[in-house]
Length: 334
Length: 149
Image (tube, rainbow over all chains, first blue to last red; front, top):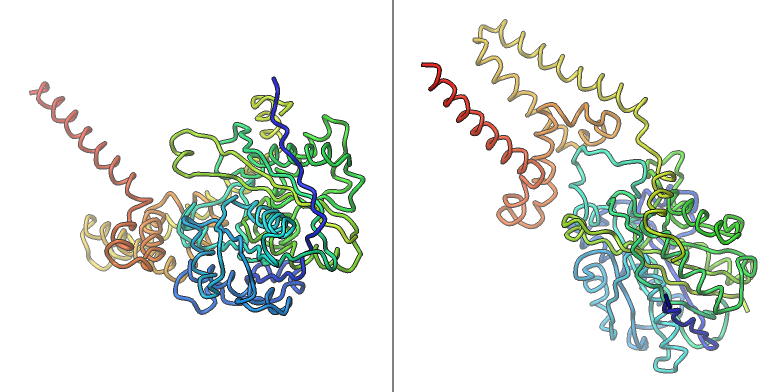
C-alpha cells in the first residue's frame, strides 16, 4: 500500500533569537532546576485559579523571551501558542495582554515543536519579521481537566506521567545567529491501538518513530548525523518502545537519544512515575537547557521531535484509542 | 508503520511495568486494617459512653467521615493514599474523600455550577448503582417472603 511520505521543509533563513522558560516548584527541584529563567514557588503564583496560574506562566515566559530579544509587543508580528486546556485557555488568556496577532494551535505535548516549526516557516517565507512560539502546561489544571481532583486519593499506575508545571517561549527571526532552525517534518496522526489513559508514552512512541524515520530519509541523514535526538515526553515506557521500533531497523537509537520527560525530574526522588509530560515539559527543557547548548556551540546539530498524545477523554470513554503525533524540528549551530 | 497494532500492543505490554503488588498489597492491608481498628475503637468508646449499638455505629461512621473530610481539606489524605492505595480508598473514609476532593477542586467555578454540580462526579456512580442494587435486592427479598407465607 502506498503511504503518504509528507515533506521535510528546509529553512535557510530562521534563527531562534531568544528563548525563555518558567517552571513550578517541583520542576525547579529537578536536575535542571537552576537553568530556568524563573521559578514560580507557589504553584498558583498568586492567581486565584489553576487556569489563571497557567495563563500567567505563558505570559511570564513570553515576557522573558521578548526582553531577551530586545523586542516590544508592538514590534512582534505574530505568535503561535498552545497548551493542553480546552479552548487553549492558557494561551488565549495568558497572551491577550500583549495584543499581538495570535494563532492558537493544539498538538497536545508536541505543541512546542509545532509552534517552532510554524514560526520558522513564516519567518523563512518572509511573511513576518519575527514570530513567537509559546506553550505551557500546568499539573493542577491538567489534572482537573483530564483526571481527578488534586486531593482525591486515587493512585497512579507506574506507566502514568506527571504533567509539568512549566512554560517555554521562543522568538524566531531571520537568520542572524545560532541556534538556526534548519528543517522540520510535520507529524502524522498515528493510532497504535493504545487506549490506556495512563500510558501516554506507548500511545506516542509510534508517532515519534514515524516522524524521525521520515526526517532521516528526506534529509539523507541517520541518527549519528546528530549530536542528540531529543523527544518530548515519551517517558520511560515510550522511550523503550521507541528503541524497540528502531531496533527492528537495525538502529540503536539510545546512543543519541534524550527524552525531556525523563530529564525534567529526578525520578529517583520525585514521585513522577514514568516521567514528565505536557506542552511545558519539552518547551522548558528546550528553552532552559538544549537551546542554550546549541547557542554556545556545545551541540552542533540536534533533532527535536516533540511528541503528543491526541487524547480525548470523551473518545476514550466511548471505546476509542489514543492517537499520537510528533513533529520534528532540526536545530543547528551553523 | 511497518508494525501491526497487535504486535505493537504486545511490545507495549512488555515495556509497561506492572504495579508492584508485593509492596502495594501489604500497605493496603495494613492501612485499611488500621482504619478499621480505629472504627472499632470509636465504636467501643461510644458504647462505653452509654450509646446503644445502633447509635454508636452511626457516630462511628460520622466521626470517620469527618476525619477523612478534614484530612482531605488539609491536603493530607491524598498523600497518605499515595502509599496506602486501596487501604484508604475502600473504607468509608475513601468515599468521603471522593466527595470532598471534587467539592474543593471545583469551588472555583462557583457554589452551584462548580461545587454543587461536580461534588458527586466520582461518588455519583457508586451512589446510583448502590441504591439501584439495594432496591433490586429489596424487591427480590419481598417476592421471596411472599411465597414463603
